[in-house]
Image (cartoon, rainbow, N blue to C red):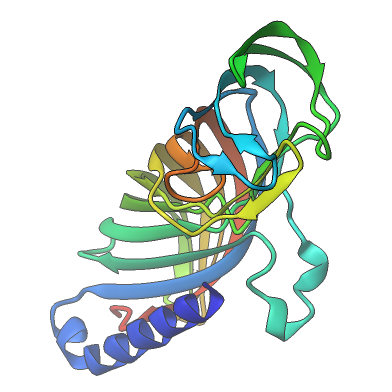
Length: 274
């Protein structure tokens, strides 16, 4: 995944440089930025289902379950200690922004957040449904070894297309400008879900699992004409309608939650108008 991101960034940067004269004549801008984020999540109710009755060699019997765990808590996994290692700069919760500005006020932005979502182990929760044909309706402990561990850590992956609105606040010279930014948008969630269920673990493939809507707002500081820094907060609603459990065709999970993020990015503006 990290190599794919790097290739995309290299391609976009090359394209931006090739379009320099054209953008300048049209008084338009293109920018790209990179940064890191911290996230919090609301409680989530997660439904697990696999009634395929396919024989599971690990368990020694067919898989047959359909149950829900209620109001579970989850945390992010910033991994900020990896930032200093250049090879591992994509391990932390990084973000990428690529945008095209039609003028000094309006634009459109591709917004990618490599966030991570980890259900907290050992919490007490209520479970209801059936496992191997046996009805269950009781409180239980999220034991990651014997029962369940669930996370989107490579990652929860929010891909959004946002509208961008800039409100200029302070501009003492051409080399500095402070603006407020508002970015409403929507997109898809593209997780790689790592699941341990009844002692069996699988880190699944990346796939489109659902959708997300949200809005990002905060402060943007432009400096030295082509550089900028953004500090923004995001509120979003993510709906994972089909997360994989033990691979395609071997169980699904669905849940939804609210996410809050604080994100800091550094970026480069191509062909900024005078």
